[in-house]
Image 1 (cartoon, rainbow, N blue to C red):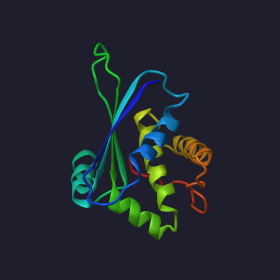
Image 2 (cartoon, rainbow, N blue to C red):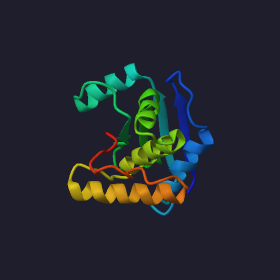
Image 3 (cartoon, rainbow, N blue to C red):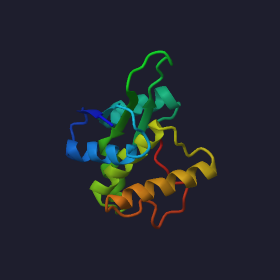
Image 4 (cartoon, one colour):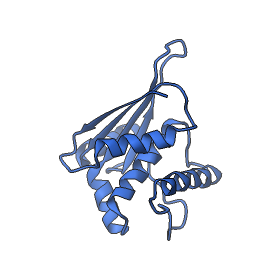
Length: 159
């Protein structure tokens, strides 16, 4: 698989190294997608995420991560998987308030967003449990702690 990740930091905040972001995405895709793949990752501020969350989900305020799977016509053979938008200030605030390692929380949001691009979801309880288990498997393989440790399931990223 040839992976191309375009990363834009429009947040004005410090963020993980681009190679870390690419590595997290590559780990998610490994064994789950064999075709060439292009993904865009945009790191945004509160204002931009609030607009996106309102415009696409009809929810007020910012969220941590949103995913936008590509919606290309079937006859258009392009490797674009989609876009992930992560709100840097929200991720930083969540990590602090939840007493999580900042790098681990960034990895979780990136993994979560990438799984959404692959069609995973957490609307139904069984879907949520499956997605949480997969996130935990991926993150622990990267030597990060379980992101749901000490939480009652159902506390998901909003993508």
